[in-house]
Image 1 (cartoon, rainbow, N blue to C red):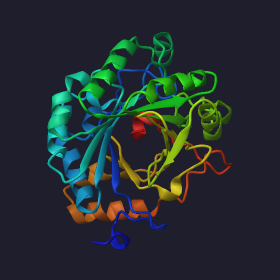
Image 2 (image 1 turned 90 degrees about the vertical axis):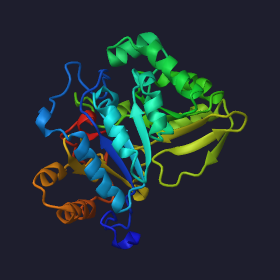
Image 3 (image 1 turned 45 degrees about the vertical axis):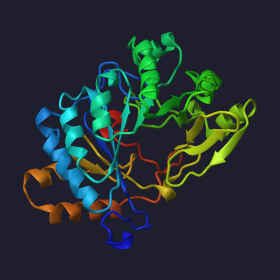
Length: 328
C-alpha cells in the first residue's frame, strides 16, 4: 500500500508512521506543569487497555505503515505489566523507544535491551536537587541523575527533555548545555505548552526558541543538523559529541511535517497532541468488530487532523485533558 492510499495519510498528505502509545495516566512525580499535587482524575481500571489490547492495536497500526512506537505515560514504568507489554511489542517489525522520568529505569535495562529498545528519552527539568523537588515534589534527583549516567554506560541513545518555564528554570540553560557538550547525549528544550492540569499556562511563561538559541550561541559554536520530521530543530557542537534540540511548539510550530499519532492509556485515538476530539478504539476492539471497522476509524480520525494547532491565536481551543491523559 502506497502512502497516498494509506489510512494513516491525512488530507494534507502527511503520512503518519510514528505512534506514541501511553501505557498509564499514573506517575510517581508531580511536575507542576503537568500534574497537580493530588494527581489527575484517573480512568477506571476496567477502561484501561490491557497488554493484549495494546499489542493488538499496535499490530494493526504497524500493518498500515507505523514504523516507530514510543511508549509514554504518565510514567510507563509504573505499570506492573510493563515487561509483558514490552515483550509483546518487540515481536512487531517496528522501532521501539521509551519516554520516562528515569526514577526506576535501572530495574529494566536487560528487558529493554532484549526488546531491542535503543533510544530512551528522559524528562529532567533541572540539574539542581532542591529545584527538582520544587518542580516534582519528590526527592529523586540523585537517583534520576545516576540512572542517566548508567544509561549512557549501558550504551543506550539518551535524549534529555527539559520543559523551559520563564521564572522557573530558564537560568539553567547554560548549565544544561555544559552537561550535554561533553556527553554523548542529545538535550532538547521544550517550550512550555498549554497542557498543564492546573491550567496556569500563559504565553508570557514561554521561553521561545530564538531566545534559547541566542543565549547558547553566545557561548558555544553550533552547527545545524537535518531535522526531517523531528519536532526538534537540531544542532551539534562543533567541538564536542553532544547535540541540542529545541521543540518550539508555541513560537515556531512544526505541524506541516508532523508524522505522529497517539493512543491514550484508555484506548482513545488522538490525531494530535492538542486535538479536542478522541476516537474510541478500545470500544471497537472489545466489541470484536474486526480490523476493517478499526481501520475505518483510523482513516476517519486521521483525515480530521487540522493543518496546525493554532496555539497563541484567538481560535485556539485548549484540550480538556492534561498531559498525563493525552500521553504527552
